[in-house]
Length: 172
Image (tube, rainbow, N blue to C red; front, side):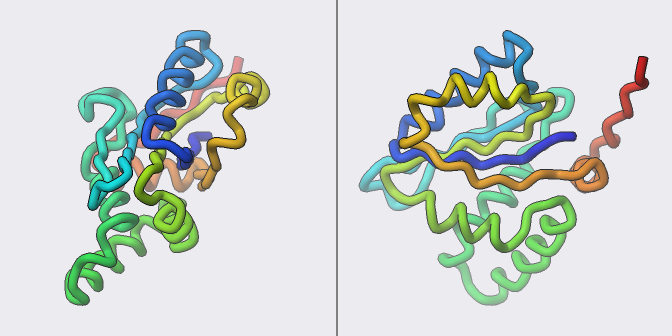
């Protein structure tokens, strides 16, 4: 099962540092990084900067539409008019179908502020205890906001962004 997580860091560099660690763990086959995005919000900046982790043509990538919609829901709703806000509300309803609910959006919006960063990951096959060991010294500088996706939600997410559902791996 794939998982969508958001990791909030207490520095603008924290998300980039964590991503570098996770990419190293992926090379060790301790996690599969399907896709992700980094949000950095330097102190004094009016809004955060975002960038997608993978090329949108990569297999399994969620695509710019997904990340754009998610970041629009999280960071820009307070700045736009009611008519656009209502349209975003409809989009938010469709995000709920794939495991992203109002609580997830609210938590991230409240926690990611100037001087912080956030790493959004779409992952699979995580060896949790090994990953926890790698981040044990950083736990006081990071916080996890998590939304687990069921197989059905993962398929809906892929379908919503024009991808074929993941094929089941035959058991040996």
